[in-house]
Length: 139
Image (cartoon, rainbow, N blue to C red):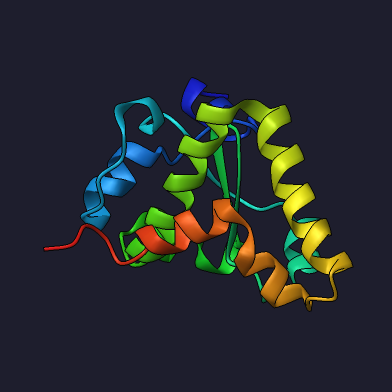
């Protein structure tokens, strides 16, 4: 089997990097995040999202709903890419423990205060910062 075919069969090989996708989308990505990977979300996770979630960011990786991946990497979803690039920077800045602990604590506190899921989710400081970036830089 030729090397290119062998590489295509490696499941964790990154085919889409944030840097080139950001350029195609007209989005600015920090150099520190340019090598982060954009991958399709695994089928079990995409099923769990049930069409309500478009993407999720983990350290160094943006997982995108498989039906949206081609559009994202072609530059067709700049707001989504800006949102997820903010999350990459948050993971890098705060580290996995602090990011997850703060994110989950904020969500759980809001839910225990009686807020519905959507309100609690939108109230998380990390999400507010990412949503604010969706529109892009102000003119």
